[in-house]
Image (cartoon, rainbow, N blue to C red):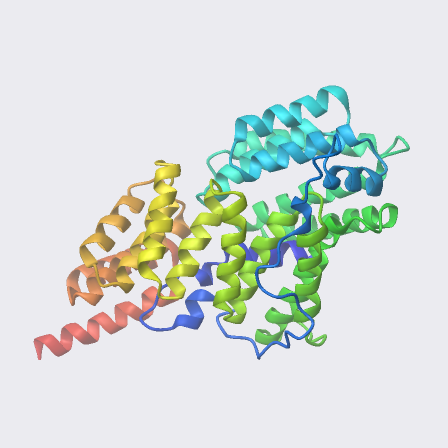
Length: 413
C-alpha cells in the first residue's frame, strides 16, 4: 500500500531537488530532516557482496537460477530467461533485455513476460530523465501485461510468480501515477500491489524478492512518521527495514541490485555517506552502464564534497548517453557548489532547452536564479525566481524573490 509511494518518494522526491544556500540536510534527504541516530549493531557491514550474483561454473545453470526455480516451483529455463532479461536491463542493454523476455514469452506464453519486460524497459528509459516521453508505449504494454497475468491466475500453477509479477507492475504503475500527481489513484494502485505481493509470499515464503516492499515500508514509514503528525508513530522500524532490504540484496533472485540502490537512498537519509558510496560503487562495479545508478553516484560524491569525482561520474553519464537530459541539472548544482558560475549557467540553460514538465522546469528556473543570486545579478535572479514561481509555485522561489527585493533595496539605498 504505502510502500510503493514511499519508494517513489525515496527515488523521486522534489525535496531532494532543491539546492538552497547551505542547508545540506534539506537537499540530501527525502524528509528534509536528519533522523535520530540509528542503531546499526544488527546490520551488515558496508560493502558486503550481494549473494544473488554467485555463479557455479560446474553446473548448467547458476546457483541463483536453480534456487529461484526451486523457490518458485517452476523450470530453470523459465527463471534463467527472466534473470537474463533483468540483467540486460540493469546493464542498460535494452535490445538484449527485449530479446530475452520475448524468448521466454514464446516458450512460456500467457505469463505476461514479454509485456512485463516492455513495461520495465519503457519505465527505465523514462526514469533516466524523470520524464514521460514513452507513456503511450508504457501504458499499452502495462494493460496487456495485467490482462495476461489476471487470466493466468485462473489456471492452477505458477501462482507465486504470477502474483509477484502482477504486484510488481501494479507497484510500478503506482510510482508512475504518483509522478503525474494522481496521488489517490497511486495509493489505490499501491494497495493492490501489496495485496498481490502478499499472495505471492503465501505461495513462496522463501522468495526474498517479495520482501523488498516490507523493507521499504518499515524504513520510510518510520522516517515520514518522524516528520509528520498525519502518520501515527508505530515505533522506530528503520533497522528492521534495512535488514529486510539487505536480505533481498543478498538472497534475491531478481531484485538484488534495486535493493542495493534502495539502501543507497537509505544511507543518504541517515547521513551515512561512506555506506551510500560503497553501495553505489557496488552496483557500478557490476553494472557500469547503468545511467540511473551513475546519476546517483554523482550526487553522492557531490554531497560528500568530492567534487572532482562527482564531475567525472556525471560526465561519464554524458559519455554513456549523450541525449541524457537530467545530468545537466546535476552538473549545474555541482558547479554552483564549486563556484564555477559560468559552467553552472551553461548547464542549466542546456537543461532548460529540453521539453520539461512544469515541475522540473520550475526547479531548473530556481537553479538559474541561484546562479545569478550568487553573482549578485539581482535583476536576472529576480526574473528567474519569478519564472520558477509562475511555472511550479515553488515556495523557495517565492522566498528568494523577497530576498532579492531586499538586496535590490539595499543596493539602491
